[in-house]
Length: 353
Ligand code: GDP
Ligand code: CA
Image (cartoon, rainbow, N blue to C red):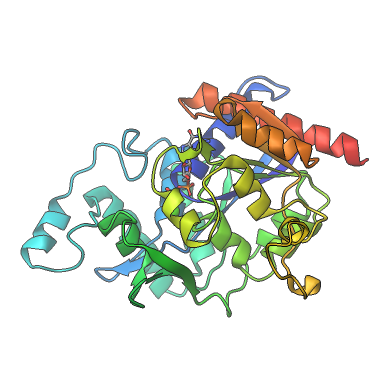
């Protein structure tokens, strides 16, 4: 079985760790081996050059989490980390004092940058980094060319996403997100293939705007998702109508989507329907050029027990929905969520056969 996951950082990494645990549990030999092949397509829109090194926050969170090296409490970075270099850089008044790069983490960025300077692509550099961590899944950047998310503030200023997110805690109202480099971006080798040849595609509880939204914006990726023969199932990144951690609500507000499980599902859109159909039916949006509308990408959606009303509203519209506990408390709880997602994918497959 080939499973492809589109992922941001912490939410996507924790989900994928649970998915791998579930696949190991159900593997025929029962002894840690698995016949499933998991490919993770990671958002690289948060990437940034800092102190002369290339930092890839979501790829690194995935690599450390799946490789058993992550700082568990923090959710990103290395455990047993120190920050002597960052402290010394601050003494020179260099860089972003609010963006700490741990000493061990810096080694990752130095190695990656060295390889990029030697001419390797980001995919190749990522593969080399992963040789050390054996994440148990193939990690692919969404694109090898840089695509960086910038945030347009109310006063028109454009700041890098990390500055808005980490320094300002997303508290400055955002007018919109701009993906610099997107027009020329090409999906990295293997990405489109991983979507079109998958048996199942999963959208973990990642940020729908600046993680999965950015991946979907890479030319070709949304279409691959809209047309793959594989069922596409996602997990709502909200519990009780709020993000579990982080400020995804600020991102959703900027694009005019409510922070509810049903609004996020409609934002992704049902496969086979054009996005905007619902809005047009409600006549609250002037949709004249149907062809220009993006296609929906989801077949099914996992909604938390605390969001039953949202689930019922989607079921009323014909969405395949599973209501379950979606809090990724620990690896076993997350493995159970992944099992529900795969079961819903099976159900979708049966229904459409
Ligand atoms: P980031 O790149 O580190 O911000 O991480 P992601 O984009 O992968 O995921 C962030 C999203 O995951 C946020 O919207 C969170 O609300 C959501 N999230 C985090 N933990 C959980 C959880 O345990 N359950 C659910 N349903 N969502 C979660
Ligand atoms: Ca991220």
